[in-house]
Length: 220
Ligand code: 3PG
Image 1 (cartoon, helix red, strand yellow):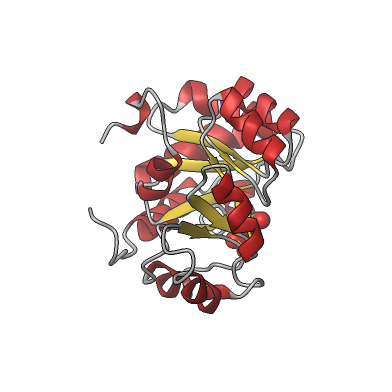
Image 2 (image 1 turned 90 degrees about the horizontal axis):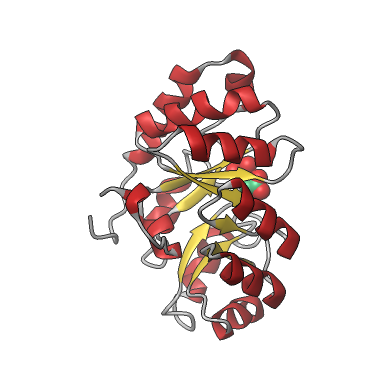
């Protein structure tokens, strides 16, 4: 599937592309392109670069321009200004730690598919009111983990989740085995020390391992 050719990417396409969405924190623009190439080489194309550092937008721009096999998105998008800056930098999707109606509207205005963060039933209901059915469960482990997702599967039978926060290679399978989980998010694919050392081989290997994780409920 040539994801980079999508005229209009959807949140569902972001979630279904691979079992793991890497949550990336970059402090050096020089790391962005080789890191993205390593992730793509390992089979991970949907890349969430968090807006947590002064370099984040420049990193998104570099990946968008120079790594055609990647689909770069912005994470930690918290308000309309973040959404506008992310879109301007070339982000193709947005991920947020929570949800507000203003943020949803801004992302729609910018043409950015949004994975809104939720941690309670009321937050799910507010996001659903605005048309969102693909949601990030954040912080997943701290907010109830797999047991919470099992409880939500009843009342929120029409929602698919991307649990993020505290997900590791060890517990990812437990989340991915749930019918209402499409993928997970996690920072382990891009360790800070691998970035500092320019160890792209290690990042590629971590991506390859993540790309091969089983999703028994997802149609391939
Ligand atoms: C974050 O906010 O950094 C993400 O949720 C990733 O969390 P993790 O480091 O626990 O994977």
